[in-house]
Every structure is written in C-alpha cells, then in structure tokens.
Length: 120
Image 1 (cartoon, helix red, strand yellow):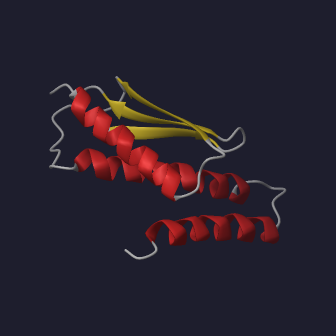
Image 2: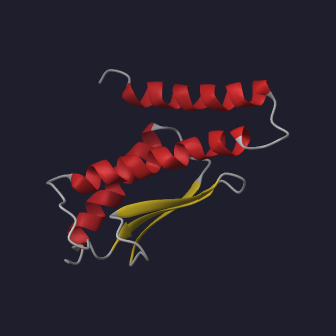
C-alpha cells in the first residue's frame, strides 16, 4: 500500500482538464479531488447527468495496485469518458426517451470524440 503523491494527483487533474476541454464538456460542473475511496480502485467518477455535475476522484491510497509510468494520465482520460457517456446512459435508461433523443445524445458524444481526436 502506498500513498498517492501530490505530483501524481496534479498530473491526473491536468490530464482530466485537458480532456474535458478537448471534448467540449464546458457545460458540466466537474470537480476533481484526491480522496480516500472506500474501494481499492485507483480512480472513479461519480456522475449526475440530470444535474450535469460530476466528480473525478483519485484514491489517496493505491492498495498495492501495479501502476505503470503514466497510469494517472490514462486513468484521468478513462474517468472523463465515463462522464461523457453519462448523458447517453441516462437517456437510454429512461422510459420516456425517444429514439431521436437517444440518437442525438449518441451523435453528440461521437462528435465530441471526433473533435478531440482529429489529427491524432
């Protein structure tokens, strides 16, 4: 078990902010924090698509996870992607959602990914 260094959190936060901006997620209220998670996960996200709020959480303790160089960067991007698909998930699980609404939400997500990865 090791404690997550502040420098690692700073990289996680910077990478998350980079992807939030690249994906055009400015309408979301997204907090990023270093906390002790109740699980052995390295990072996780909590999302409310209804309120357009999310938390990206990096665990203070790694619980012996085998973290490679740059793992925090991959984890940040992964958690931002979870927030991105949160809106689609909410619509897809709603009884009231029409096919058109689901299509629009999926299309918005795809366009965000296209813009962010253009030229890579």
